[in-house]
Image (tube, rainbow, N blue to C red):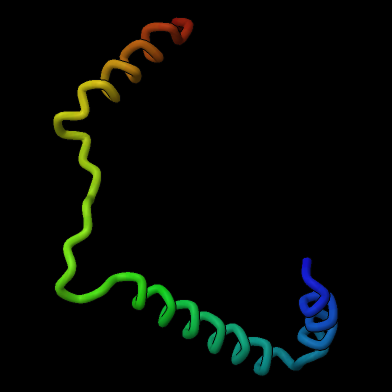
Length: 70
């Protein structure tokens, strides 16, 4: 844990409940804004699909076959 966190946590713990909730709300809002900046409009992104993933299917089948039967 960083020095800033070590100093900040005791101060946050002393806050009244309503102010703690407000801090949480502000932080969640900031995190959400950061997440939306990860995807840019008009840009295509590759998405993995299990279709045509024959090597992965083979690995899974071998693992299944090696699993002891109950």
